[in-house]
Length: 388
Image (cartoon, rainbow, N blue to C red):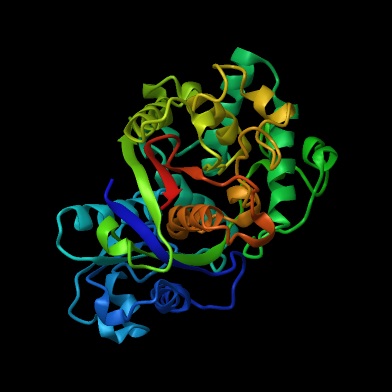
């Protein structure tokens, strides 16, 4: 790969005062450009990630960034969408632009305003990331889809409720250290494990603590070619960037094997010249639900099939474990504003690699992995990043 991240910006995630995605984009676009130490006029193209299924009635958002950065007028700007991997889709658009040598500096933005939408409508919108023909009547919406995945995994490998609670507790503990996280509260294993009035079942066996949060937020970054990056204040290189798509219907696959993520990780590690996921210093992975993180342990090769619980229960993925996973708190604690998520994951990984992650900073952060997923393991993106 011949591309580097050289600047970034990130809003808090949560229920924000900004009324729409236009105002959220205004918080991060110019800030990322300034962080890179360049002028807006040097941006050659923009790549915007916004989920396309109804959180905003502004169905054509590509040029909204011009409202806050008028210097980008007459530059090419394109909106990307790929369900919960929308942010990574925008990043890949920028990488392709740079690889084609159409410009030197690309601005990537991701944003979502979700909290203004009523709860039942949120569930209906998110269900659009599933196969409507056979999955639209699943109770619990998209949470119900992952509830079915958890049920199938439990049937094959036994009750994993302890492992799911351990994942939730780990990510909430990590979220305390993330100044941008929506929920900065260490809930503890016991709370996450037990059904209660404050932690009811949402889509059995998944409880509220097993589900990511409805969020507003935005993130942005500047990407340039490796030669240009040599003169920049900081640079984080893409050692690998892979996209793998799988069938949309969960009935068309062995859904508890997460074969798309498995293929994406294999290709990315090979592209990066690495032998195993344990060659990484840390991973930011797509824990839209705790069962997803458990299955991703197996897909990335951290454990054999059916043994993902070991990584959670034996502390392998804790902040001080052999492969820290979601030191940011993940989607579980940080929040999951759909269009912003993939960009956020890359920004937080870049911060780790440049030693600027504050209270989240890991003592060893030399090479990091990012896994961002659209749908139930349908659009799968893996990036491997290192500091130059």
